[in-house]
Image (cartoon, rainbow, N blue to C red; front, side):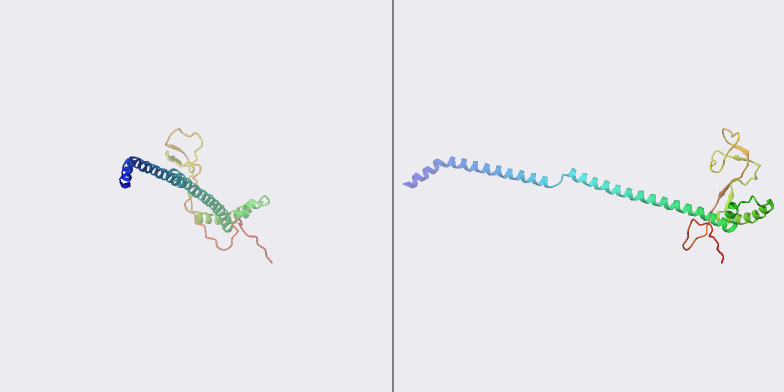
Length: 211
């Protein structure tokens, strides 16, 4: 009875059933697509972009380079300060040697107006010997020209202006030939004695006190 009627009713409703299944499937697919898109957007928002990463790396590199530049600048200033201090110390030590060997500072700081020329001459002989020893042993001072003063000398185009000073009617081009008025001096080698112990590098000569 009823079986035939039931089968007939199912056959009659098959198209509607198929349409409902298809519609439901489409809805499910759309929902899945929406969920997929939302998850991708969330993932992209949570991770920095390649551009942002590159910019961050560039910023870190610039900070690192800037830090190194500051350190290098500080080291240069410190090195320059040390070099300046060493130069000052060496200059004062030169006076120490000249005073020690020739008592040059004593002589130059003394008022010699009250002394006779003969007395001054006798003192100068001793000072000359001591200071000459310092120039020879500690500075190896040599003349720039082997010729005697008053002789004719020639200078080429490649001369060092710090070593040669031209005066008078200087020609416009080489060779420069003129009379040697002063043969000049140059330090061939510096050989200062080593100082040990606690030193005040500004003291030329200590004061003497006798009891």
